[in-house]
Image 1: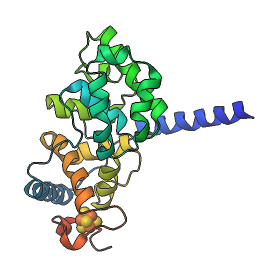
Image 2: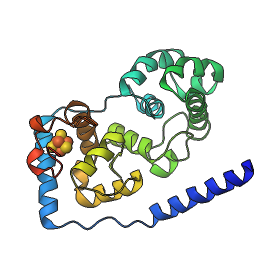
Image 3: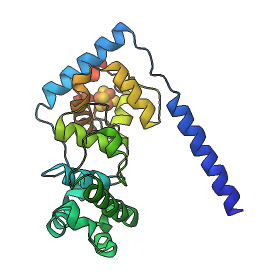
Length: 239
Ligand code: SF4
């Protein structure tokens, strides 16, 4: 019975993946593009200094912090990482850590067993294959345990200013829908829409600004449309 359920779930995942792979980004009218550009300009004016909220000093720390941020607030991650990096300051040190010790340190971020395993696995691979340095190439990053496209985009964008995509987290997903930029729900499909709608030079900042906007103004279930700087160009304003 369990094997049957497992097989069905595997098939469902494969179907979803195939659907995402085959998705072609939406086509946008000139008017939609102009509206999106106005929103971005207002976000830049409202949040001029916005940056990654995860505390880090280098690519290794940001990779680890981003792994921990899955299903967890940045504030909580920032409470945990000082001890993590004090005890294991380099990939080589973390690769030698006892899994149970890492689990204890990251416990409060949720899914701590998986996250600890990913952290140690990531550190091992970085030490053994990449000479102790987080690799820059997207394909290499994606081989690190616990690193999916979102984490890779965060690290490449924040550390090296490389924009190969748009980071789609829960805020970016929600606000992109409210702004009428996408009708999709799968992060990979939303990312394709955002890439098609916005010029590459704003991809990195766009995520930071939307995440900030989602925390300050366009808050889930209680958006403050009355004080929103992009309300004039938001089809969901006041809805
Ligand atoms: S107008 Fe309202 S729904 Fe639209 S982005 Fe602003 S806060 Fe969110």
